[in-house]
Image (cartoon, rainbow, N blue to C red; front, side):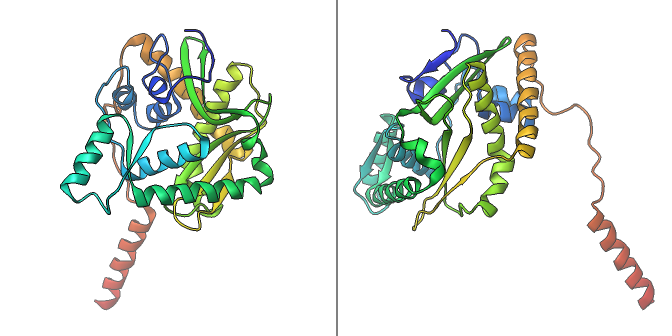
Length: 286
């Protein structure tokens, strides 16, 4: 395999890591520097074959992705009110064993309604025009950064050079920017920086990378959010450290966990102030 753009690669092929050597994805890179190399090693499909069960919210998000992108994980409706009956559970297990996502018929109807509503709002959004332009959904990019192989899957990548890239996020909570910005700071700014780095290594220069956040509950409101320059710089530094650390771990074959030293936890300011106030009150009463 050579670095490049792989529009026909399936999600299963991508997540299994098709690179010549264990490669770095955004999720693994984030785990690498925010937890430890040991955790990243455990999560990597080439090092740990243990399957990880998807949660119901994850499955709901995957189905909504598929409905909006026209590509993704296969799903199948189950005509049942809930999963409590033996028949419903057995059918759910059969569908999962076949590699598809089981959805209660009513939940699938809701997902379809959400997709239609979200796409309708996006068509009216001036920054989302590129989403509907000719392009590729779930576009796989694989690049080399020195000795390190990097990979990412862009939810929607327009064919026009330099066009904005899009990533869909779904939430059962609020998509309001004031609420969701905490998630952007904690999680998604890193993803943005990682994806843009992979693209740049392949000579791609998208003018922006937007997150389209979709609420999974009616009225299925959306917001578009991205990292401002001040946050982007921090995320780019984190990605740089992750790439360097991954190269060292791959080269050495060592995957350390947390530092082998005892951490001494200091009292927070509020606890010290509370204790001083309590002691002062006791002295006054005495």
